[in-house]
Length: 505
Image (cartoon, rainbow, N blue to C red; front, side):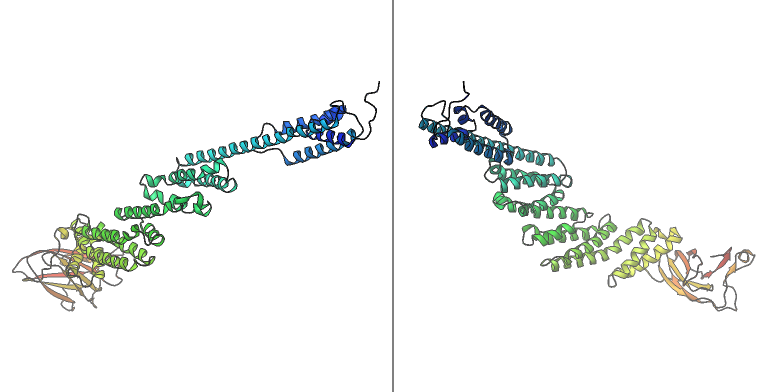
């Protein structure tokens, strides 16, 4: 018997029904005309598509697969219509019924496509929510680290939030971004919440850049959230360094005045600096006057740096800097006295010389000269430093100092009276050999034929310490003498130079 019925008269309605039934993707048109191989091809093609498409995920079906499948269905429909044009249907017997059946069964692929589209959208939503959750975890983990280490993680999370908000604006994940940004801001600025103001500065500065990349409608009030907190952190960090007297507070105050000049925090800068200067100036009278002077000098430099970089506050800051400079100069005297009393004579001399240079009109300038002289003497004769030099002068005992040296010398003395003077070089004098100074009867300043430069001073009774030091480029070491003066005597001091093995004394 034949495998198929004999050809039927052409019927367009039947051909249309077969073509529509093949568009279902199940090859039903081929089934009704008994074309088993094309039927199997349709089922295989649909099975492959289902294997590729299911389960539905966020990536969806590759576009190339859909194009190939659509072309295949069209070819099957056209081929089926061509076959059905002259082939009788196995069932149903009436072509109109087959046509209606084809139209109805088209709901299968259409419904499947709609279902798949819904499933795909849900898969996309789940994937976006997973991305959101991963970004949240990244922010949470970054919050356990210091900002410098965690900054890249914060930036990565922000990129995810931005992508969700901009490129997936209608998604459920995007709808949660505004709330996530609140957590993001508080996590990045956690140091501020802990009142660790210096640490909080950099994170808050970073947060001020977030609106440059994040849509402002996603931020709302967060757009300006860091501003007041950054101003507070800059002030508190600067004020802490200012109070310690060790930190570099100028950058913090400078940035505050430049970035938030009209803020309440900026208005506190000048009063804080002014209070620090007054505190340091008062400390000059305390236990550590030298430390206070050092702090005043540092304040003067730092305040001048700050005033050079600001606008409206520069004049007020310059006045405070000037006061710090004057207080530091005046405090040098107290510092020098403390150093002298502590036995640090070299430093006391240096400090007093600096004070004399810095404060030409200070009331203590003359006594500072006396203390400087006493400190220099005490470096050679430590016993001379037991008492602080006074402003006393004169006395009833004459002491004549002569110079039997080829060098110009400075004579320093301290005791009940302190002073100094210079004696010119003795033109006809030479340095004595060390050996000759040991001979019996040897005595300097005893040659009546020489005109020794000399000077007579009047001193009160008591112990006076003398130091003779050569001036100019002489390499001779200072000479010294301790004289116990009493009434009824005339005293003579002689300065001379001896040489031994290349050294002068």
